[in-house]
Length: 483
Ligand code: UN1
Image (cartoon, rainbow, N blue to C red):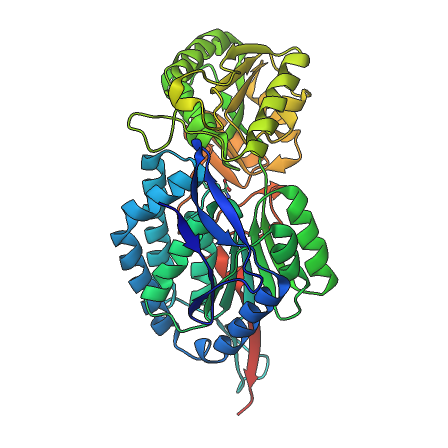
């Protein structure tokens, strides 16, 4: 079954003006074309932006409670379509089906959280120096918001940007990664079925270099929220700053866990492996390196190897699979390159490192879950984001040394400490340079009501989700009424 995805502009599904298409391929089986998506031009983008601009006039006038009702409806529709949407996403980007179903359910929770946001506080009353004056603030929409999302969370990330954009009264031009364009179209159709007025959400497919760049340069796009690579994020920041527009960037990570000698080693090993290998390591929050105290290094290492070797690799739609393929040829080439670098730099390959041989893996972008030991913090594999199932083990003497080494990195997204010592947990929480801190937990994960984002090069220093979303998707008016 091949699916065709058009653009969605002003409440209607329309072809790109030049009629060309990009193919979406199943990374578990390259013989399967999941579908085709429109390869749009700047003219198509402009149609979408103009539609969003026109729709904004009445959308922002609706009460936030009424806007929330559309999100409630969308949540119900999404909930009824978990299986279908998860299956399409798994075929497009390879994530194992049960993880993908979990993500679609997370999408439902995100919609419900932001639907309720229409009933929460939007401003403050402040005392004025003039006793009779009424001084208050009000949050108002920014206008037309561009949303650019990656393929690795094809449901949750678009929704955690689109839902707050809409509830606060903005209209949206949405561009998903081409790899997951069909999943994205299904999400847009959920909003369409929820009866959202035409033009409030517009969906435009195409190449990042054309449509993403076009959004950055379009004067009627007042803000862009982006999740993806640092390289692209930097270009967005430069372009948006140049025309004085707002931007929000969520980018890479190189997320450490620290395992102390008093930790529950089974728990630490299980969650380190889960954090590193879940979603084939293709999460900006994936666990990338473990700093392990010398006295427990060997015991921890044995547990990690055993756990990693028990993981079953194969197509995400098959039963009993723990780890699917990488999402694309570029991804596979890049991960293989990092594994080669690790070997060249003198790290010890403890597990994996090869393309799996099983017949179910022969047509896809598969790689074994990989663990390196004897890694030092200045090796390339310990410094750069790999975005694949590769874990580095590094021996340390103490918590202080581990924190110092963990902080010696350009990224600061998430970090985790395994210990039973509460005092050490607080030291870690205070001193680690990470936006998301876990004690005895996995580095990944996010809850819709909590701020999400990283320090240093991991973000543009704003946060997504929870009440933090308001900071980006609104702007403040300060109003004084002199009676
Ligand atoms: C999670 O860990 O569940 O692209 C969320 C990413 C992040 C989202 C991670 N922005 O991997």
